[in-house]
Image (cartoon, rainbow, N blue to C red; front, side, top):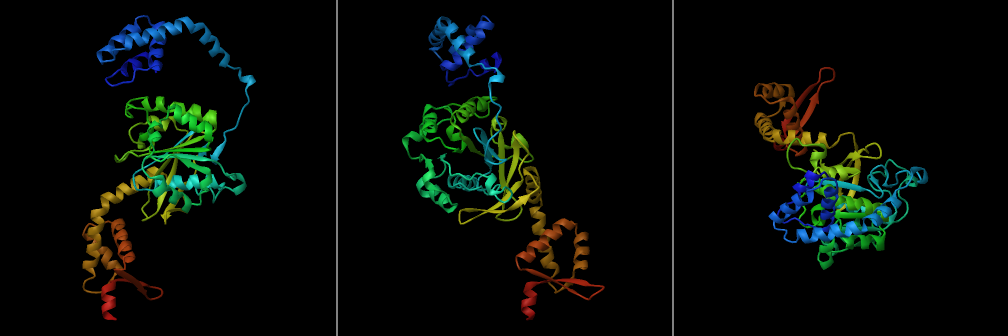
Length: 412
């Protein structure tokens, strides 16, 4: 953060803590007069203790600066003294250990069920449904590990235990704090309480759902670099205690928005994450997708298709489509929905007098301005709803007919 950006953070209601004043002091060393400018601005927004607090920070660093500099230099190491390490995966190719993974999606697409299924697999020592069909068990996660989760949207006892159990969790290996507990309010990304829990439990996976509930007080997600600054502490905690962090967020509801702009409120969330998963609905009713959109450590994984059956995540297959493809198709379908309903009514009205040749139906539909795609979708839905039926006659020169099921039943 440069000196101008630091000044721009000074607003009414801001938290003027020691870390902020240390940065002001740091710029004062290089740019004399900077501290006075910052202090005047702090006083303008009502931080009356700014000068006294700054004086204590300045006095401390002026008297202890040399000692602190020696301490910092001792932390600098030659690369030749360090060991080169490979990236470790909690979920192969998808969730890296010690790093931040974000899973984002609109409400109702099953995000909670997905993370419950992932947590259940980790706790029981199984491969997750994301990779199990493609990665042999011996290369997956085969050792039961600890999971820690915090959910501000669902009750642990009334909802989440049941979902975890149905997805095959080893409940002995999963720990949580219910939202009803007083200490839940102390859980923030930069809180000492969070570090205490990570140190005691040493989870392989730590889940936050949703991200907004664990931000430090007065943090505004829309302000540039704000989210990056408040989430940086997780990177250090991951390295220190070995935890992978899975953070649940919402997606942007604006149309034709893709990539890093798909995560609501702040693109910083995308930037600081090492892996990003976007969850949504496919065209097929009851089938959702998980699209791997970002990976800093390897190739993107295949898009996973799944359904939710009795609160269990059921793997349905893989797709070559990505989030953008599904979004564009869903938007197209939304725009065409009125046309499709009109086409369905046209088909039923056209068949009111009885069975007709399909070619005749297609020609009249073209004259009426109904596209081939809309007519095909309308016929497919009517057939699925049991309202129409097709048949053919002949061998070499086949003719295809279409009729309403209501008429067929009447004739019988």
